[in-house]
Image (cartoon, rainbow, N blue to C red):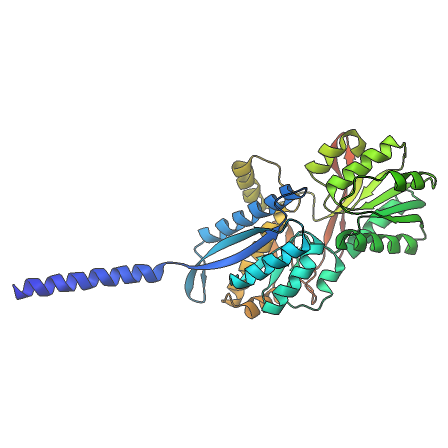
Length: 382
């Protein structure tokens, strides 16, 4: 009887030991924050960023990652910043309190710049898939990175095309007074003047206005060869329609963020001839891209939005840095991000000392027959 009792006790202890082992084997959750505009005029872009980031999280988790000798499971904590700077700051504070290991975001420069100060104070590495204003990486924060080119390069390439192949001599500039639009317009104007072009006028409007009548009547008297608009897609579509309504024949030249369905849908026939220089390549190659494309089409049955590959790569390069550091500690991950060389679906990724993308690539698009068509790709070797 005593032996039976001992055997039963031993079996019970063994079972408890197995359960404890199973509990210990449960992966540790590592949070990665994602912030972008998921409602409002730019909501479709923000949702695309979330979709791509979630795909990256799931792809990584399938590999059963081990970091610091411990199996981990990554989890995306996605938040809608509404393209609003104050909301972005609140989300940044929420991410700090939530102890995220890193952040992917934001999309708007006017949101990403103030939020980056909060991340930097907390030591949280953050990789933006879209913030392009030069000021983002000029703040001196070691924690700030971007996997898209900055506006200084984009504006220069735009000016070269406007004054070169487009043969424009007289340019009118309009910006939307946001951090993104105003900074891009200033860079573009500087490049136009450096190339001996003429800026006939530089107007500013509210980013929320739909009334371009006064500005365009003034601009029409200047007989511009090109109207350059530094603002987002929905407002650019209104401007395109107003240009045609007031019979201003100058083509519209826009900035990054226009290429996608929103501008085409809202501008209609007035979109024809619009030119934009966007960050990244027009199409991607390789097995990693093929898997991403097939998975996206299966899940969402929708076109891949321009910035989605950058969000996917932002998650993957953060995880790659964690693996190199063998840690999810903020300072160690940040240090690895400054050294990393990573092959993503959007190309070869590495950062300079300020957190800018090395060797950026751009694509020049033009609307023809109601569709965005690739004119050429442009490379910058750093």
